[in-house]
Length: 88
Image 1 (cartoon, rainbow, N blue to C red):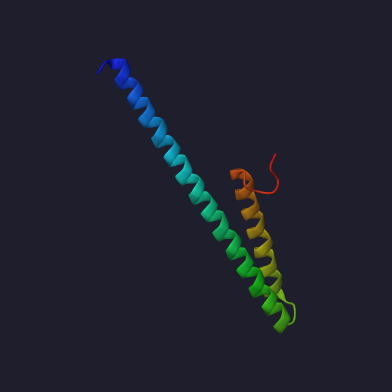
Image 2: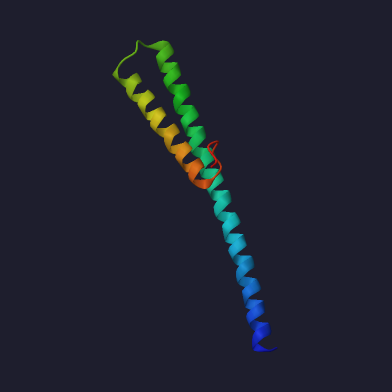
């Protein structure tokens, strides 16, 4: 096998490995975004339940602030990865 053939083979292997790693990273990012969104939804439900059972107070306001910050983080991750609704 000539040097050119070997170089072509190595290039093809490297390209395949790069695509495999890229796909793996995308899958991981999607999974993390989904998990963060699920956590935000659970936190929102928890705050809503607390809101329904108790008078509004400091803890409720803090919980709502945490939810808004978490949702902002989820949206930021989605937009960074290009899977958010604000695709540009």
